[in-house]
Length: 334
Image (cartoon, rainbow, N blue to C red; front, side, top):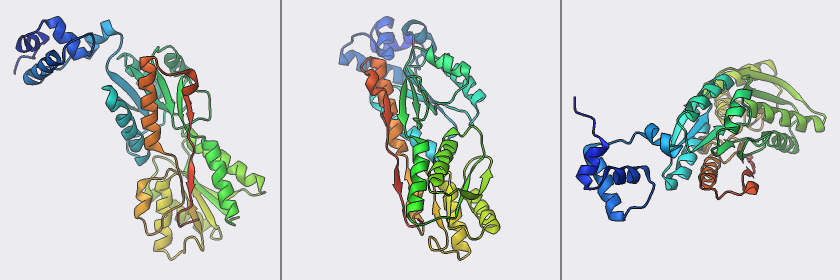
C-alpha cells in the first residue's frame, strides 16, 4: 500500500510553503497564476486530495452544494440535476446528492447529514418538510433553495411552478377541446405533494364547468410506462366510454398510449390522453402525447445560479422568489 500523499509533498514539489499550497488548494487568498498552476499541477502529480472537512473547521464551509431529490431513477429529476450541475459549474462549487424516496423522515436525515459537512448551499425539491427539517434549514446560515413548486411558504430561495395552477389550466384546456367524460391516473403516494396539488387544481377546474373525475386509478412506487399501460387497461375496462384521461406523469401517459395503440383504440378520436412534465422521450413516439412543460433543466440551472449569487452576498430579497410559467403542449393526443 502506498503512503497517502500529504500537503507537504505538494508544497515540496511546487517549491512553495505549505501555507501557500493550502491557500491555493482551498481557493482563498492571493497567489500569482504561475504559483497556482505549480501547486495544482503538483497536487495532480502526487495524487493529493484536500481534506475538505478539516478546511471547514477554519473556513466555515466546504466547496459543496447539497442537493436533495426524491429520486434519481426518474427522467424528471435527472434533468433537474443536470441543470443544477450546469448552474454550479462556472462557480467551482460541486453538487453532492441525497435521495429521500418521497419520505419526509428520510429527507430530515439527509438534510442533517449534509449540513454536518458545512456545505456552501442546499437545494431541495419541494416546500413541505418536517418541523425539524425546517428549523435546521432556517438556522443553517447558508443559501437554501426550494425548487419545482411555488405553492407554499418558502424558507429562502424558491424557484418553480404552481402545480395547482398547472392542473387547473390543463382542466380548462381539456374542457375547451370538448371532452366531458374524464378519468385520472396518478400516484397514491401521500407525500408526492406536487402531484396532489395538480390534481386539486385539475378537480377545481372541472368543478367550475360542472364536471368531475368520473373514474381514477392510483399506483404505488415510481411512474413507469408499464404502470401506465396496465392502469389504462384497467380504467378503460371499468369505464369504456371515458373520452379523456389525465395522468400525473408523462411516463404513465406513454404507457396509456401504448395500450391504446396495441388494442386499436384511436387516440384522440376515441380517447384523449394528457400527462405532465414535458419529457424529451415524447418526441419519438408514434403520437406526441399532450403534456405540460415544467422547464426542469432551466429550473435547476436558475436555482443553482441563485445559490451562487446568494453565497457571494449579491442576491437581493426581491430576486429570491422566481415563479416560472408552465406551458401546455397539446401534442397529437388532445
